Image (tube, rainbow, N blue to C red; front, side, top):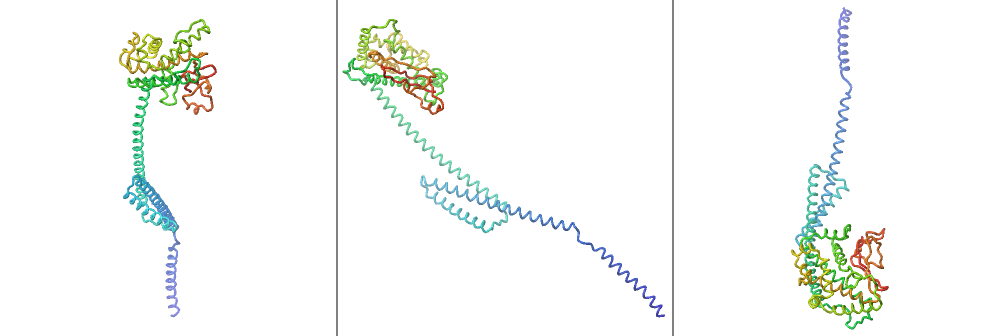
Length: 439
């Protein structure tokens, strides 16, 4: 009985045990190890956090640098304002700029300390960066504004200086015109009254040649002034006189007009009375007589004004010389363009002499040249004039340069003659240099 009972209980216990064992086994099987996806997720989150921290640190540094440059720009603007306020003196401006300087210097000191202590934390670096850039641009605009004010004040100062110099130039020109008028009206030239034909020296001729050249330049200035009043294009006119020449400075075009006047006025200078030379050579007695004749003409004219002499002797050799040179020098188209008519030319052509300021200036120039001509034929041997050709190499013995810029521009090669402005003269072994324009 007991054995039967034991045998009945045992199978049920073992069945229960197997059931528990099976349950535990299922649980053991269902409990899995950690998944790889979770590991990857955790790793990604960690990496993303590191990158975000790195980007934040970079943004903080950029914001710090923006604040630094903005503060420096503000210091520069304040310093510029401080300088500008000192002249003319502005007490309020100086005080305002000084306060800004002190404030920004303190700000720079705080930025330095935060950098050294690595305390550059910023909760919103993007906003800080944006505001710093605005501050920097504002400071730059202030600096440019102050610079503009400085340039404006300097411009006004220069304009006032120009006005002062222009007024001074007008006064000097008036004084020069007054002196020229006095000189022309007196007709007196530097030579002692007791000078004899036998005592002539090259220094006498040099003095009168300078007077002649000065009178030519005075007439050229008047001619250019009349051409400007008639709306002439002086550059085109100068290039027509001296084609192919590039002038070093704009005001050098006056040398072209001067060369034209000298060319016409000195034509025939080596021949008595500027006439066609005779084929036969004069004898020694004829040379002495001619020298005496021209020296007497020189003495007769040198102390008299040109206009007075022409009125006194309207049919003299000098009067004939004036008429011929005027008709050659002043072209009909030029005269009509400048004066609107040919009245002066018609009077000169008919044998009368106009009393206009233009012709009076011409006659004074002609007088100086006629005196130089008479003096040249009074020497023994006679004085002769010479010119050099375009393209000749410059020689300090025979030439004087009117364009020193050519020496600076042609250091590697010798400067060449562009054109002759004033001819040169030779008196025995004495040479008076011709004046040339170099290119």
